[in-house]
Length: 286
Image (cartoon, rainbow, N blue to C red):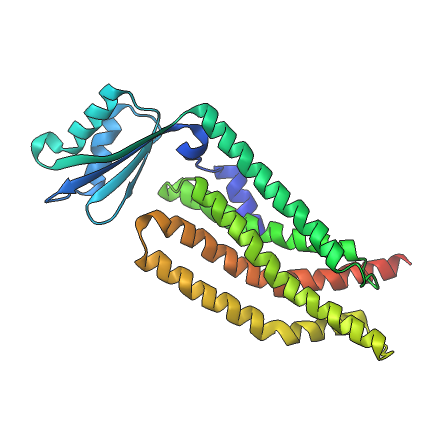
């Protein structure tokens, strides 16, 4: 999954939307009959608007994302979407974002994600400060970040593929979804790590000698049900939002769904085994 995701990002890149590049978002609706989306795409392709994205909004509306439009281009688009009077296209809203604002939003998004990652490492290191054997507390934070990178790279790779073949764009909702995935996934991982911490403390209080890998395995067994049930119920809600919710939130729901599945996988099969691997590697070095 990681190789496919990284390869997709490297080969296809991300289809960045107007939120970060600057441009115009035009929403139109139709009264009465609604033309086919393929027919609209065909007519818009002849207007020399450059890179554009057309998505359906509800049963009788469409959202067009394209370069910054002049007044003449806006009028021309509405006329084109009316098919010479065959349909009646009405402008619902027009939002224009300048390239400077787009650059500022992109920088703030990167800063937000970076701050979240740093704060997670510091928080985990602080919480596990009293459990420094056999694995140092700060390593729990590093392993958490490794798991989070997995949980973020996989949905980003999916977006890169969908952007290449279906025109999905990276916008503000995409950043919101990634931040939500970071929060959700770290919560799932911390639950497992917290159980490891409690079992290590219990072994120390009872003066019980137990291999670290057995303690981690026992902790996983105690949290399987919680991790799977939480992820499953969240996935059900996201599936309902994707299939029954409005068009505007479908991309958000899809990204979140992929992130939740990746997070459930990494919490069980990546984060905890990495604890054992680091401990084994540390023992071999000694």
